[in-house]
Length: 72
Image (cartoon, rainbow, N blue to C red):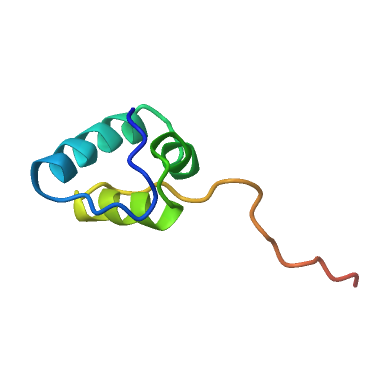
C-alpha cells in the first residue's frame, strides 16, 4: 500500500479506493493499528474511514475484566 503521508488530504476517488483496500485488509484480519502503520496515517483516520465505509468493527479482544470473587 502506498504511503499517503501524514496530514495530506485524501479525497474523491483516491479516498474510495483507499476505503475499499482498507476494508479488504481489515476483513482479512489486519488490525486498525497495522493498517495505520502501512498507510502512514493515524489510528483515528483509519478507524474513521472504516466506520464511514460501513464496516462492523471488531471488539478489542484480550482478557476481559471480571469482578473479584469475595470470600465467604
